[in-house]
Amino acid sequence: MALKKRLVVLASGRGSNFCAISDAINKKIIPNAEIAALISNKRTASVLNEAKLRNIPSLIIESKLFRTSVGFDRQSYEIKLLELLKELKPDLILLAGYMLVLGKTIVNSFPNKILNIHPSLLPKYRGLHAQRQAIENGDTHTGCTVHWVTEGLDEGNPVLQASVPIFPGDTESTLSERLLPVEHKTYIEAVNIVLKKMV
Ligand code: GRF
Image (cartoon, rainbow, N blue to C red):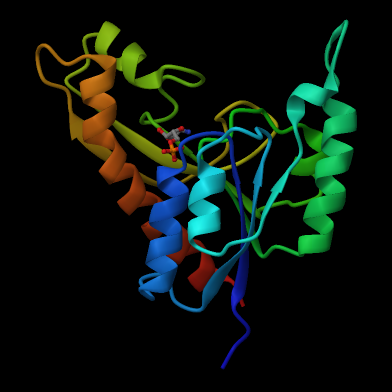
Protein backbone atom coordinates (compact mmCIF):
# COMPACT_ATOMS: atom_id res chain seq x y z
CA MET A 1 0.00 0.00 0.00
CA ALA A 2 1.30 3.45 -0.92
CA LEU A 3 2.42 5.74 1.86
CA LYS A 4 -0.34 7.99 3.17
CA LYS A 5 -0.22 11.52 1.82
CA ARG A 6 0.70 13.94 4.57
CA LEU A 7 -1.58 16.95 4.90
CA VAL A 8 -0.82 19.91 7.13
CA VAL A 9 -3.70 22.27 7.88
CA LEU A 10 -3.20 25.93 8.80
CA ALA A 11 -6.18 27.53 10.54
CA SER A 12 -6.90 30.50 12.78
CA GLY A 13 -10.48 30.08 14.00
CA ARG A 14 -13.53 27.86 14.23
CA GLY A 15 -12.20 25.01 12.09
CA SER A 16 -15.29 23.61 10.37
CA ASN A 17 -13.31 23.00 7.16
CA PHE A 18 -10.57 21.30 9.18
CA CYS A 19 -13.20 19.03 10.78
CA ALA A 20 -14.82 18.23 7.43
CA ILE A 21 -11.48 17.20 5.93
CA SER A 22 -10.46 15.21 8.98
CA ASP A 23 -13.82 13.39 9.03
CA ALA A 24 -13.57 12.70 5.28
CA ILE A 25 -10.15 11.12 5.85
CA ASN A 26 -11.51 8.96 8.68
CA LYS A 27 -14.40 7.80 6.48
CA LYS A 28 -11.97 7.18 3.57
CA ILE A 29 -13.85 9.69 1.41
CA ILE A 30 -10.34 11.09 1.12
CA PRO A 31 -8.44 7.81 0.82
CA ASN A 32 -4.89 7.16 1.89
CA ALA A 33 -4.17 10.49 3.56
CA GLU A 34 -3.56 11.75 7.07
CA ILE A 35 -3.46 15.13 8.76
CA ALA A 36 0.11 15.16 10.04
CA ALA A 37 -0.53 18.33 12.05
CA LEU A 38 -2.65 21.39 12.52
CA ILE A 39 -0.81 24.68 12.81
CA SER A 40 -2.56 27.72 14.21
CA ASN A 41 -1.35 31.26 14.63
CA LYS A 42 -3.87 31.82 17.49
CA ARG A 43 -3.63 30.17 20.89
CA THR A 44 -7.38 30.68 21.50
CA ALA A 45 -8.61 29.27 18.17
CA SER A 46 -11.35 26.68 18.69
CA VAL A 47 -9.90 24.60 15.86
CA LEU A 48 -7.23 23.56 18.40
CA ASN A 49 -9.93 21.83 20.49
CA GLU A 50 -11.20 20.06 17.39
CA ALA A 51 -7.70 18.75 16.69
CA LYS A 52 -7.38 17.52 20.26
CA LEU A 53 -10.72 15.69 20.04
CA ARG A 54 -9.45 13.96 16.90
CA ASN A 55 -5.98 13.17 18.28
CA ILE A 56 -4.34 15.29 15.62
CA PRO A 57 -1.12 16.97 16.78
CA SER A 58 -1.40 20.73 16.88
CA LEU A 59 1.27 23.37 16.92
CA ILE A 60 0.97 27.07 17.64
CA ILE A 61 3.08 29.90 16.36
CA GLU A 62 1.43 32.96 17.81
CA SER A 63 1.47 35.66 15.18
CA LYS A 64 0.76 38.35 17.78
CA LEU A 65 4.24 37.78 19.21
CA PHE A 66 5.64 39.04 15.91
CA ARG A 67 3.91 42.43 16.09
CA THR A 68 6.39 45.26 16.30
CA SER A 69 6.05 49.04 16.61
CA VAL A 70 6.15 49.24 12.82
CA GLY A 71 3.68 46.41 12.15
CA PHE A 72 3.71 42.66 11.68
CA ASP A 73 7.18 41.16 11.19
CA ARG A 74 6.04 38.71 8.50
CA GLN A 75 9.59 37.70 7.58
CA SER A 76 10.49 36.45 11.10
CA TYR A 77 7.09 34.81 11.53
CA GLU A 78 7.43 32.96 8.24
CA ILE A 79 10.97 31.79 8.99
CA LYS A 80 9.60 30.11 12.13
CA LEU A 81 6.65 28.67 10.22
CA LEU A 82 8.95 27.42 7.47
CA GLU A 83 11.14 25.56 9.98
CA LEU A 84 8.07 23.78 11.29
CA LEU A 85 6.64 22.99 7.88
CA LYS A 86 9.95 21.57 6.66
CA GLU A 87 10.06 19.21 9.64
CA LEU A 88 6.52 18.06 8.93
CA LYS A 89 7.33 17.24 5.28
CA PRO A 90 3.83 17.85 3.94
CA ASP A 91 2.64 16.56 0.57
CA LEU A 92 -0.08 19.20 0.68
CA ILE A 93 -0.72 22.24 2.88
CA LEU A 94 -4.33 23.30 3.35
CA LEU A 95 -5.29 26.78 4.47
CA ALA A 96 -8.66 26.55 6.18
CA GLY A 97 -9.73 29.87 7.63
CA TYR A 98 -6.10 30.89 8.03
CA MET A 99 -6.30 34.62 8.54
CA LEU A 100 -2.76 35.59 7.54
CA VAL A 101 -1.48 36.22 4.05
CA LEU A 102 1.44 33.93 3.20
CA GLY A 103 4.46 35.70 1.78
CA LYS A 104 7.18 34.47 -0.53
CA THR A 105 9.22 32.73 2.21
CA ILE A 106 6.51 30.09 2.48
CA VAL A 107 4.91 30.23 -0.96
CA ASN A 108 8.22 29.81 -2.82
CA SER A 109 9.26 26.91 -0.58
CA PHE A 110 6.16 24.88 -1.40
CA PRO A 111 5.30 25.51 -5.04
CA ASN A 112 2.01 23.84 -6.07
CA LYS A 113 1.58 22.43 -2.60
CA ILE A 114 -0.64 24.98 -0.86
CA LEU A 115 -4.42 25.18 -1.28
CA ASN A 116 -6.86 27.69 0.17
CA ILE A 117 -10.63 27.92 0.34
CA HIS A 118 -12.23 31.29 -0.22
CA PRO A 119 -15.95 32.05 0.19
CA SER A 120 -16.60 33.63 -3.23
CA LEU A 121 -16.50 32.74 -6.87
CA LEU A 122 -13.01 34.10 -7.49
CA PRO A 123 -11.85 36.31 -9.11
CA LYS A 124 -14.86 38.10 -7.60
CA TYR A 125 -14.58 39.44 -4.05
CA ARG A 126 -11.08 38.74 -2.83
CA GLY A 127 -10.19 39.43 0.80
CA LEU A 128 -12.45 39.73 3.82
CA HIS A 129 -16.27 39.66 3.98
CA ALA A 130 -16.62 38.07 0.57
CA GLN A 131 -20.21 36.97 1.28
CA ARG A 132 -21.15 40.52 2.32
CA GLN A 133 -19.53 41.92 -0.80
CA ALA A 134 -21.65 39.62 -2.99
CA ILE A 135 -24.88 40.73 -1.25
CA GLU A 136 -23.95 44.40 -1.44
CA ASN A 137 -23.26 44.04 -5.15
CA GLY A 138 -26.81 42.69 -5.69
CA ASP A 139 -25.59 39.30 -6.98
CA THR A 140 -28.13 36.47 -7.26
CA HIS A 141 -25.56 33.80 -6.51
CA THR A 142 -22.14 33.39 -5.01
CA GLY A 143 -20.04 30.41 -4.00
CA CYS A 144 -16.65 29.19 -2.94
CA THR A 145 -13.34 28.54 -4.64
CA VAL A 146 -10.54 26.17 -3.74
CA HIS A 147 -7.42 27.60 -5.32
CA TRP A 148 -3.66 27.30 -5.35
CA VAL A 149 -1.93 29.79 -3.09
CA THR A 150 0.39 32.35 -4.62
CA GLU A 151 1.78 35.53 -3.15
CA GLY A 152 -1.17 37.59 -4.39
CA LEU A 153 -4.20 37.57 -2.08
CA ASP A 154 -6.75 34.97 -3.31
CA GLU A 155 -5.19 35.09 -6.73
CA GLY A 156 -3.87 31.60 -7.60
CA ASN A 157 -5.45 29.26 -10.15
CA PRO A 158 -8.73 27.67 -9.08
CA VAL A 159 -8.97 23.91 -8.58
CA LEU A 160 -12.73 23.77 -7.98
CA GLN A 161 -15.68 26.12 -7.51
CA ALA A 162 -19.28 25.61 -6.39
CA SER A 163 -22.15 28.07 -6.22
CA VAL A 164 -25.12 28.81 -3.96
CA PRO A 165 -28.07 31.15 -4.51
CA ILE A 166 -28.43 34.48 -2.73
CA PHE A 167 -32.03 35.10 -1.65
CA PRO A 168 -33.71 38.48 -1.05
CA GLY A 169 -33.25 39.38 2.60
CA ASP A 170 -30.05 37.36 2.96
CA THR A 171 -27.53 38.74 5.44
CA GLU A 172 -23.83 37.99 5.59
CA SER A 173 -24.66 35.50 8.32
CA THR A 174 -27.51 33.61 6.57
CA LEU A 175 -25.53 33.44 3.35
CA SER A 176 -22.38 32.22 5.13
CA GLU A 177 -24.44 29.53 6.84
CA ARG A 178 -25.83 28.33 3.47
CA LEU A 179 -22.38 28.37 1.90
CA LEU A 180 -20.46 26.57 4.65
CA PRO A 181 -21.59 22.97 3.94
CA VAL A 182 -20.90 23.60 0.27
CA GLU A 183 -17.39 24.76 1.20
CA HIS A 184 -16.79 21.54 3.09
CA LYS A 185 -17.89 19.37 0.16
CA THR A 186 -15.90 21.42 -2.33
CA TYR A 187 -12.70 21.36 -0.26
CA ILE A 188 -12.94 17.57 0.12
CA GLU A 189 -13.47 17.13 -3.63
CA ALA A 190 -10.62 19.50 -4.46
CA VAL A 191 -8.22 17.68 -2.13
CA ASN A 192 -9.14 14.41 -3.83
CA ILE A 193 -8.57 15.91 -7.28
CA VAL A 194 -5.12 17.15 -6.27
CA LEU A 195 -4.05 14.01 -4.38
CA LYS A 196 -5.07 11.77 -7.29
CA LYS A 197 -2.72 13.70 -9.56
CA MET A 198 0.23 13.20 -7.20
CA VAL A 199 2.47 10.30 -8.06
C1 GRF B 1 -14.51 29.83 5.60
O1 GRF B 1 -15.64 30.56 5.20
C2 GRF B 1 -13.43 29.89 4.55
O2 GRF B 1 -13.93 29.94 3.25
C3 GRF B 1 -12.72 31.18 4.88
O3 GRF B 1 -12.72 31.24 6.29
C4 GRF B 1 -13.83 30.48 6.79
C5 GRF B 1 -13.25 29.46 7.74
O4 GRF B 1 -14.24 28.74 8.41
N1 GRF B 1 -11.41 31.23 4.29
P1 GRF B 1 -13.83 27.52 9.30
O5 GRF B 1 -12.82 28.03 10.33
O6 GRF B 1 -13.23 26.45 8.42
O7 GRF B 1 -15.10 27.06 9.94
